[in-house]
Image 1 (cartoon, rainbow, N blue to C red):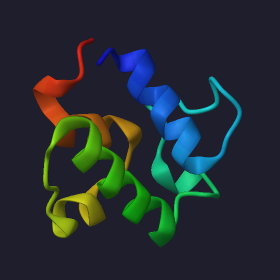
Image 2 (cartoon, one colour):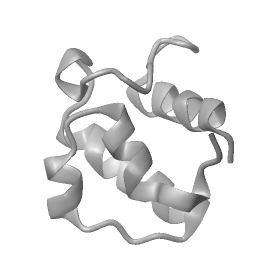
Image 3 (tube, rainbow, N blue to C red):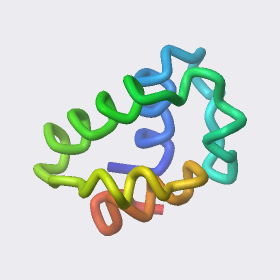
Amino acid sequence: MKKSEFLALIDDILEEPAGTVRADQLLEELPSWDSLAMVSFIAVVNGQFELTLQAEKLKNARSVDDLLALVGKHVEP
């Protein structure tokens, strides 16, 4: 998956218009990033990449770049 596709995926999870979310954006700046969005993110990552995320690591994520780091090699620059 390309980085732009990953960002579009985050837009979908947060129900934001396409192109809203930026990689350098802090999660606290996104009003719809809440516990339900976190659960949705975990489910999507599991379905798309067959990864099981540790809740603690996701809880410590502060930015969209941190989310990218959680999926690592599965997202191309």
